[in-house]
Length: 183
Image (tube, rainbow, N blue to C red; front, side):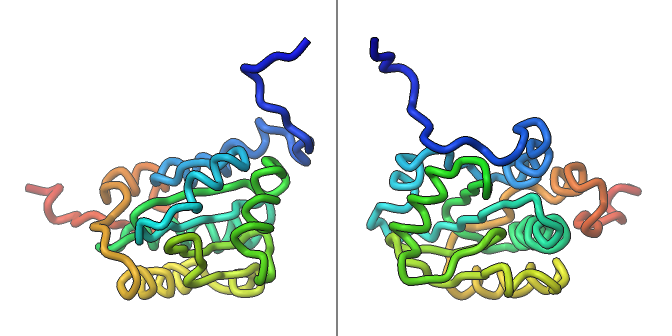
């Protein structure tokens, strides 16, 4: 008997879904859409429409928590951001990760975490783990914002400053004008 409504998963996740959910939520809360299947990856990246597409491979590691996710979150508060924002989770949707790495990064070293900016299916900039681990989130955010300013045209931020502050609970600085709150 074949059940056509279910997608076949060929590789099992490495982590408990409940455990990684808060790590997923950090990126989805700021506007990143999850790429859960190889088809999702192709739909997001297999286009020739000149849009800039940010892809973040999320991870459970400390450099993802300490630098990659916060750096991406802060960078997406920039006045110019990519047209589309996506994330995959290393060790979870393995078939989607495999498609991403094999088809869209075939000539590049891959890692988890990882941040890349694409246009027309081609990477413009790639931050590997070695470009993330040991660097402050603010440094990564500043580098990403400079890249966004050069390569992108979409108006940012991805979410309002107030929403960002609420989501991050002030962990990454205050992005609202406090003087306005006193009026």
